[in-house]
Image (cartoon, rainbow, N blue to C red; front, side, top):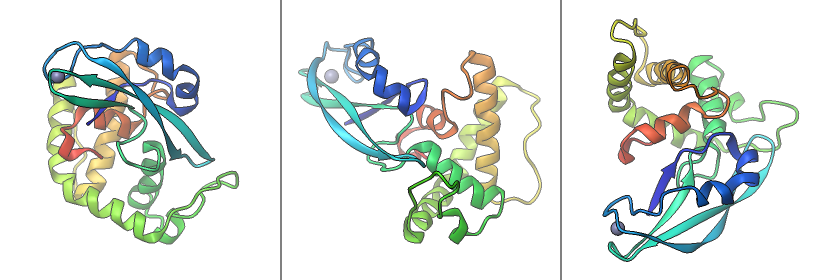
Length: 201
Ligand SMILES: [Zn+2]
């Protein structure tokens, strides 16, 4: 089973600090609190705009639950091939800035080497549209906890447009309040740490 754990600093930092980060995590099982044991690591390939990275994923085993846990750094979703920031960037272009799908899937900067298929992009959109309404309920609740009289985006916008706008606002407020640099924790990273598993972005 995969557990997403906060990692501040993004993938380049992770390549340097992964071992230390993992060493400092609790050895208690997230389900039964029993003491867990190290259970090796494996390499995963993930893509950013600029290149492919091989990152180590560390595991622990719980004798109480008889289960192995993979500790996923928060900049990537379990089983996803692309960084959260990559997906946010392209989806944001299309939904918030009305860039066509054909343009949004192409390389966004001259330096970028990766591109995705229309099918993949449409799959991302479909998945997000499907959960947008439920995600929005969570985000509104959390935003109002931060700031009870906060003006929320209004007007005739789609659930997905609302989700992205609200997520950006939530991310900003969260970073301000918790003193985390907005560059070190992405918007989707934060959402995936906050949302229930079924609503992970
Ligand atoms: Zn356990």
